[in-house]
Length: 175
Image (cartoon, rainbow, N blue to C red; front, side, top):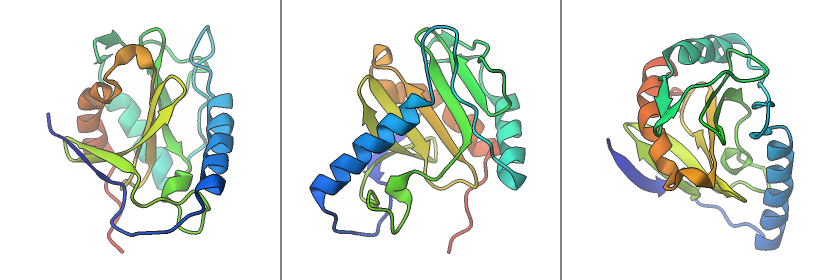
């Protein structure tokens, strides 16, 4: 296993801190509002298309049976773009939109945001109220993993998933 902490992108940007915090709170509310990780409801399936849909289906088939010691469960609703492990659920969604922090021109854009490289896959790290959300940064489809605080250190969940991501979700071509 190889974990390195780095910035999400080498570019620099200046932002209004108050606006960035407000936008981040709004985005976190929007994103977590669509993803209940307790009870019977599972993560909200994204709607990728084209190549992203194809690689997400390949990733779904390649996902491990266990993540961070937790057995893979059945997501509800069932989707080729989601997966869950454990209770509370470690939840994966493939084909999500590009994170605002990685989108130039977005007021939340922060190319120096924390990222971890795990087994040659780069993951944007975003602290949540209870745990972390990790999103791939350089792949043709964005893969999001939400890890509840019960699984500290949350980054450990990435070790079993990064190999499946690396083998099924290609890197974006360099600009």
